Length: 279
Image 1 (tube, rainbow, N blue to C red):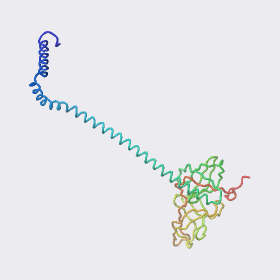
Image 2 (image 1 turned 90 degrees about the horizontal axis):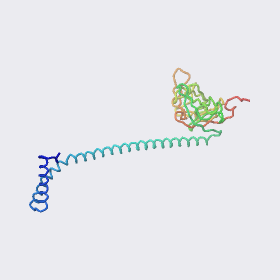
Image 3 (image 1 turned 45 degrees about the horizontal axis):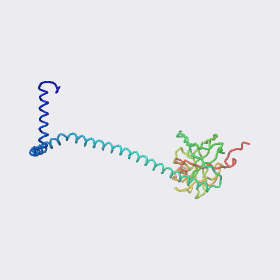
Image 4 (image 1 turned 180 degrees about the vertical axis):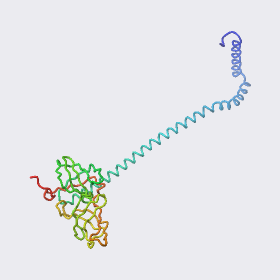
């Protein structure tokens, strides 16, 4: 439109002449250069003010980018911290398991009978049946009636055998009974399961019997199910009740029934284990 005839054409010619005049003055006039310097002083703040929004936008962009990078770095560090915590817990679990295995191997070395090491792979979900499942079965030579021990003491008996697994009834099961004797005095009795994982009872103990809290109970060997001398429980209560013939005697298991992952099966002769011969 500016190159059409009329006022626009004259405006272009005027603008070109003004531009040429300014260029000539800038080249040859010292006074114009001084005036130009004053104009620069006036225009510089205006230029700075015009450029202010752009600078603010750049600064804001930098802040947003920095905050985003900090959030990403924080999230990465948080994930690494969680992974490190998991590794620490895994290492603690492995260390604890190694301690239990060393303790079990130490207990194994003290036994006169041959034993097999088994791993617990399942727990009966029925709260009224204290039974666990192990990874050894008939193919491994496991038989009914074999005693099961951990590093602390007697855990129970094998009550069911399949080709590759076996089920053990713990001594805390309400159906369990273990012939025991008080290590300090030699008094013999029967330790009965109560259905509680932390408590057993010693039945039919006379009020006059010398039994104290802290006394250790070991297998007596009577009945042929458990070899004599294995730790079973510790007396935690002996209470005489007036008017009754028998005292209340409670004990806690020596075996770590709630957290033992590995256990030992004592290999006994069938006659010693109370299992009739198949022949």
